[in-house]
Image (tube, rainbow, N blue to C red; front, side, top):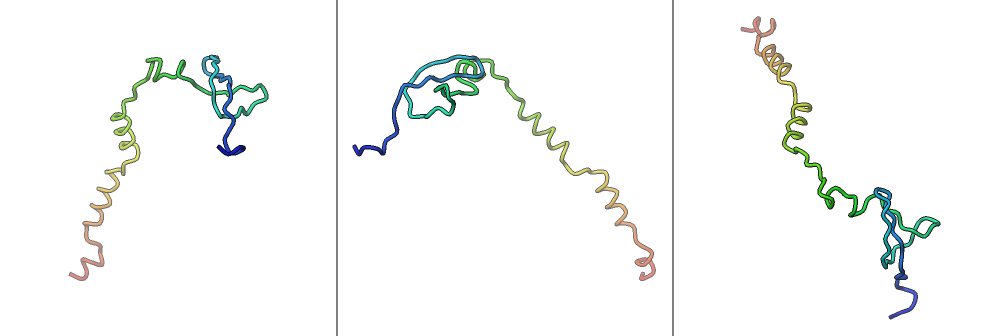
Length: 95
């Protein structure tokens, strides 16, 4: 192997902000803080998917709510169509 082209593979400490868990493993990731630890927002110990406390979201209900909120209003469209169906005075004069 050529020297100087491969990242350094060292033992690093990971710290989870979510639950406070710390563990050590070997990695090539460089720490961005002065304490030498790699900080994570969430880990497998506190992530809802891994702990079994996952909150299921009713996606069908959300889609329907979105469609109701942002669909075009039917009442103004019907009234506009009714107004355009009535002949204007200029059209009645032509007939």
